[in-house]
Amino acid sequence: MPSQFHVKTVIVGAGIIGTSIAWHLSRAMETDILILDRSEPGGLATNAAAGILGPFNETDREGPFLDLMRASLSLYPDFVASLIEETGLSPDFVKSGILSVASSDEEEDALKKRWQWQKPIDHSIEWLSGKSARELEPHLGEEVRSAIRYPHESHVYAPRLLRALQGSISQRKISWRRGEPVTSVRENGSRGVVVTTSRGDQIFAEKVILTPGAFMGGISLPPPVMPVTPVNGQILAVRTTMRPYRHIVFYPPKGYFVPKLDGTVVIGASEDDYGFETKVTPKGMIEFLSPLKKVSPHLLEQPFHHAWSGLRPKTPDGLPIIGPHPSSPNIMVAAGHYRNGILLSPVTGAIIASLLTGKPLPVPIEPFSPKRFQSND
Image (cartoon, rainbow, N blue to C red):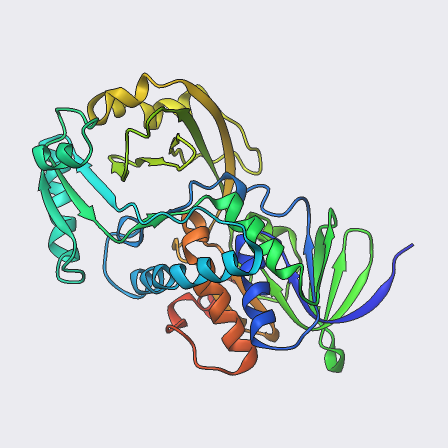
């Protein structure tokens, strides 16, 4: 039988963004928080992520989005240290650096254009010849002719980061309800916001924070519509011995590989429009495995470990949605992080906590405001 009850704060979605917000908010203020999730926390995005923390490889221009990503990366050392201290769980944060490589004239021209706008922003970035790149990573192919090295870019093991956040917030005044999709979120006059679930339960809250990932479109909200759609990403892992790679390596057109501390190397990733279906296909795998014949043939000879896919929540402009809902200020939105949910989790948590406590924002958020979609309706 449907029930009704009250709570101060509801977070809709228990992936990396929702749990980071719960962690930041519970540290910033005394409040009771209820986290609602349609399935298991982190099931379709966080647990499928490669965990790359690479701002310069996620945009083709300087500006607010790069600033947001760099700000979030700068928060990571303290973020991870706090979680380890609180829980004893390590998310395997590794300051590996990234090599972005080129293996043809066309690829090298594109890499040089990237270098020209990026170098003035961060003087630690290095241009490398193919020979110098192979000195850092001996298993790069002979056809690799140049590379940019980003020494500060890093990676984490995303499922362990999520578990550390869950372990920390479980010690606080936070409750969970799993397996109960939210169908509606509406302002309720003087009573704040009412959240309705698929069972018909109504939860009255002072504030609601929307972090439902790719499932934003399944929730009835006040206008404007928050246009978030799912993009299927396929990834696989191979198992190595003696950890032959040290850096994350990005290679054209959209490939990368990430050496993890457990000896696996994660290789990705496709971008497919399969709706809400998650599947692994030969076509998707070929997309990012074929270029490795030039970039690192050695990797293609390693034993297959496993393959998987997940749903990335994408907006039309590729930017996240962060801030108060335009027509409902008691509803906060933190969604559409696409490929960068893991990278942006600490700064998003800090932003939402600042908005709800009235403290200064860590970075400007106007470019990511939900207000930019007001013309959609």
